[in-house]
Figure 1 (cartoon, rainbow, N blue to C red):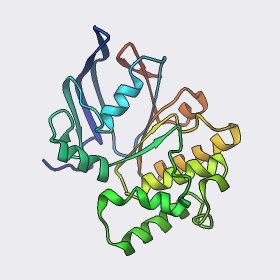
Figure 2: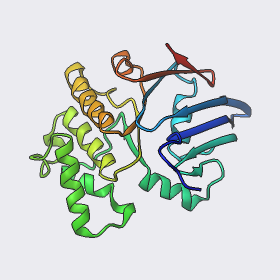
Figure 3: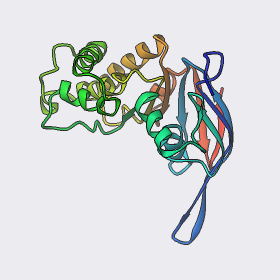
Amino acid sequence: MTTTLTEPAYRIAGVTKTYDQKGRRITALTGVDIDIAHGDFVTIQGPTGGGKSTFLLILGALDRPTSGEVVLGGSDIARASSAELGRLRAHEIGFVFQGFNLIPTLTAAENVDMGLEPLRLPRDERATRVTEALAHVGLAERGDHLPGELSGGQQQRVAIARAIAKRPKVLLADEPTGNLDESMRDEILQVLQTLNDEGLTLVIVTHDSAVARRAKRRLRLAKGVVTEIA
């Protein structure tokens, strides 16, 4: 199956997710039907335990739905092989988390380079992508700095550079400003907004209304059900 830009970035139909926990059957997602367009900026809000993290894991090809389909890049995550899921994670999807997940003994440039390992690119191509990604987030002069020598906002920018160096189709972020103060939050929001303006599809789970207000589209996920926020 091939994908064209006339198709959505994600096509999500009839998605449910259940799992067993301490002898109880938990329903995390209930019949989710939604499309996410190429170039969209979507935020997902909702109460803790409402299914947000589960939904993001499925969008990221890190988990499979119990039923339904989640089509990304022409592949249905629900039915794809493990090898195909690995390809999607390596080539189609960038990830940014609340914790920066940087290796403290590696420089900013080395941390970004680590994210390119699954692509098995030539060394020169990797070096070019690292340089471009750091420049893209405003850290061209900080590539030789260790994480401990950077502010929280700068560390999160390194994490974003690591994600975008793969040149993904979609960037998924889980509370990307959750560990930052207001000024650093705004700094990261501007980086993300610029990436979206350039055409990158963003899906962000957040509790922060300031983040959600930047989105083109706001979703609420509670008790496993997705609704649109006007």
